[in-house]
Image (cartoon, rainbow, N blue to C red; front, side, top):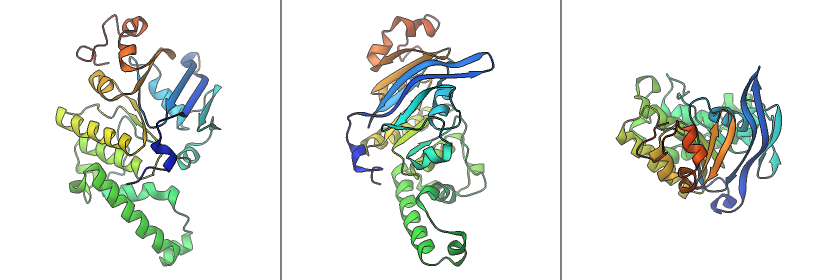
Length: 272
């Protein structure tokens, strides 16, 4: 599997940024004047207590929510308020807290559906399965098989999510996000509900994604994972950004410790 584009192999510059993001639901502030930067080729974690606004921030970036104020850019292009499908076409993919796969379609078919942004076949061409339709089908199947190999889910290829374990569905959903050939992947709580062995598999996959030049953003409660994998960390609390920096810098930030009920955010003691 190749990186989304040659530029993604460079770890320099900012790929996604936000400035002054505000999001409210009625009188409740989900995000309050949030600034952030995600550097190209890094693993970035967004952390904070429950209700801090982590998923709301991801939803704004990926087009599921539209902030009332502020600006979001992808490689300098303003994507604020752009529909989710258009943002996906620009190279941002994501997973969800609970895997959202088609339960009675095989893993192969779930991943093939993720190739839609790379196809231009018309309905008529697809019905005849000739010319461009046949070529795109062959190319997509080849790429999906590469993803299956990369994610090490060969044994899940012909199985349906309805009969998989929670951890297996997590792996398949990450693979589906990769099938879109993204520049940036957002993983929403990829470790939740997993046993130690499955966490190791997901962590290895995340590290390999970065090695391929893909920018990875985690929303995660497992501090051992955050501190072990991240190049940088953004901390939210009640919709406000209270800290950002390297894992070590964040771990010694007093505001962060206070947000976590006064506990040190040492990886051994905090689970979110």
